[in-house]
Each structure stands twice: as C-alpha cells, then as structure tokens.
Amino acid sequence: MSEDEDEPSPWAEIVGPCYTVTRLARILGWTEAEVMATGKDLRLLALHSDDHVDLFPSFQLRDGKIVEGLRDVLRALETGTPSRWTWAQWLNVALPVADPPRNITLLYEGRLEEAVRDARHDAWSWSS
Image (cartoon, rainbow, N blue to C red; front, side):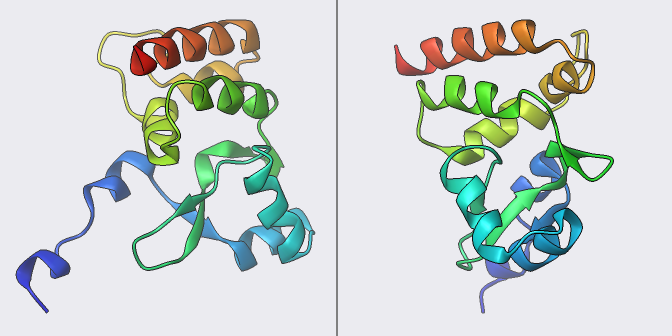
C-alpha cells in the first residue's frame, strides 16, 4: 500500500459523516432496497466511494427524517453536472461570507425557493 492510500480522503472533511445503506435503513425504518431507491430517484444523495461502498451523507437528515426540499435541490444540481460528489460539496461546504454558512442550511431553515434558485444558478454555471 502506498502512502497516498493511507491518507484520508479530503472528501471526508467536505462531506462529513455518512451512513451506510444498512445503517440508514435502520434509522429510517426502511429496507435496504428502499434506501437504495431513494438514492436512484434523488430523494436522497447517494455517493459511491472508490471502495465500492454506497454512502449517504448525514447532513441530509434532521431528527431522523429527510430534509424537506432536498429532492428539488438535487434535481436542480443534476442539470449542471452528474457528479454527486460535487452536489455534496455544494450542499455542505462552509461558505466564508454567506448567510447561511452552508447551502444545506437553507433547507434546514425552510428556505426552499432560495435553495432551488441558488442550485439552478450554480448548476447553470457548471454546465456553461
């Protein structure tokens, strides 16, 4: 194993804690198939690691429930890039001089229209 393989991925800090399919199924009271279906139809953001593990960032849940409006934002982001890792970064990275400090916070605060508008704008810039 090379030294690079021993280094943690920088994505771990950007994305934050994640759930496995099994763990998320337990939290939501769903089957693993139901969890995987939410990743495919963009009700949840599913990430596929280099180790071939499906991960679900914990920031998309609040009080054991999917953050309202997440699907609308993910669909907007999808128009700009197919990279789900980029979507995770867009949602969770700390923005230095922004209110709120992270885009996912817009959804926590119920500011869906603003979140979708910002997602569409950034997706448009990615696809240009």
